[in-house]
Length: 513
Image (cartoon, rainbow, N blue to C red):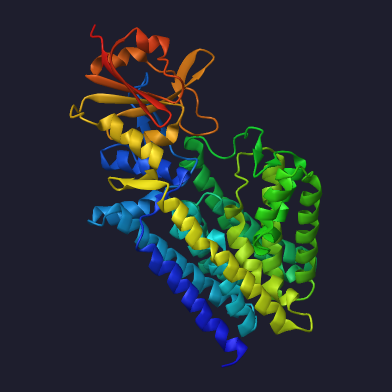
């Protein structure tokens, strides 16, 4: 068997291992997706669609969940409605999404006319990447669904360049709506996609291709529809993000440029994020690293663009426009996450370009062998991550959570059979998602206790403490030394106090008027 033929069975072996092992474990729900599941649970209990309601706050406070799109919870919801359990639903969705995604990248790489070695080598690089196999450890929601749709959208873009028709205009409109339903960043991706047609037209200077500008019609129409019927209803990542740091890289102009332009190189060179953390921990100025990442990405994109087919050139323009858009969002302090998972679909798209450049040296097979060894070394970290998650999380009902949170949740409901209770969580909004029945997370700001939804800007509504009298029991969970809010002390009688893994749990009885 030749070297080329070894790559295909190796890919299938690694992919099957990734999927099969997943069915022996329960997934952890990522923090962002957990907010969607809270909306799902309230909707199943008769609440408003894609909304989270807090009736214990003055004015029956509720907000439309416009920060994240509903695809992350709608698909599990549909399976649950036909009798599938939560864990099985997440496993089915993840298995189908990853399989569909891999097949889409396979078709795309073939259409782009990469050799068999590059196609299978790229697929091996993808499935052994942490940003791919982590989906079998944690349910990320929109990121997973976007990964499934993305390669087919790129294939659709290549088709659009060859034929402008009414059908294609309509299909583009539908594609944008579906993509946004799965993940909100697809709106940025769709603008980059249509922008690639405009750039090609401008670069070619061919007035005959002016018809490509017609694709602006479905793009603008879909954007307006999305804004009116979704984004305008609540808070979005278009708000201002707080200053801070991520992975030891500060939120400044160099940090913004690095994550927007350097992330593709970081993902494809695999150990780059780890090297970044090591350098940061020993006190090396990361501005230099950020500049290198930007230069490397820019140089590679230019090189790829000047040495490929028309389809490949469009892919490079599409990718470059997306990186430019993310750079603009970061530099304008929008609340767009620095996390590299947002760049994964594009990094995977550019993988065969990177490999083709790397193996252009004389010892092609030797270089590819070294790359595969590095891939397998990265994949070897998979069981280590799995082991850590399994030994730090446990199941409570159908939800897998951190052990310290699981213990706290059990203590909250230990011996409690009264349904008319209210659970108040201080500061830790994620813990409120695990509660059964009425619950709310509050934070103190300038002496007032207000809603803490885990969002950047939703800290508005004050707690109406008088509503406590309508409950039989109030449970207050604090992460501090155990001081009750003054307003709460006036309205309750303290019955019991417990300490659980850094939490203080108060069992309280409201004083009736």
